[in-house]
Length: 192
Image (cartoon, rainbow, N blue to C red; front, side, top):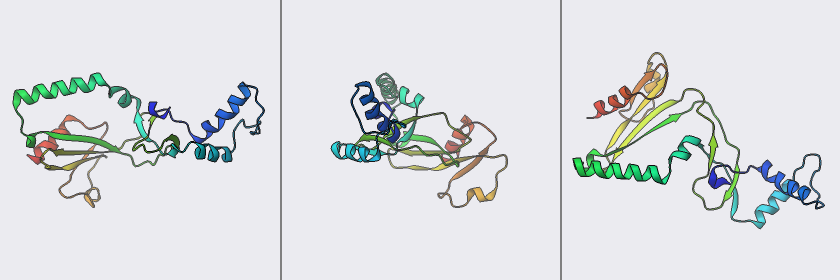
């Protein structure tokens, strides 16, 4: 289930054996009122299935999970190949840029069970809440680094925003909405 981004939490896993035994009319010692297996059953289950562990998943939006598919990856690779052949870009002119939203509101997923040895565990989450601070970061293949562009959701710019930031960071403010084209252009104009 977790490979499809719908992992089982501790409570859901504790429901499974109780529900299965009820369905098959098998006698059990689980809590009949709650319909849950005990924590000792969980520990025994994990001991018997050592390839499963309890992990904290990363947020993955449904749009992101559905858009990363073979067709889209092949389309991107084909388009990139055509552009590289046509314009003959050197490695110093090809940048990898990433925009990320940094939320000031703490939120946390509950742990889910997954196979041991996995580097990353995902779980579907709802749309973004609140207005995050946006960070735009770019590198190229020759290890050239563009200072980050940080966009704060504010009305006025104030000096404390620029303290304790990476050297040469570009700070801007936005009244509402996400990263607009003018901010991305500003990132390029400040660099080149």
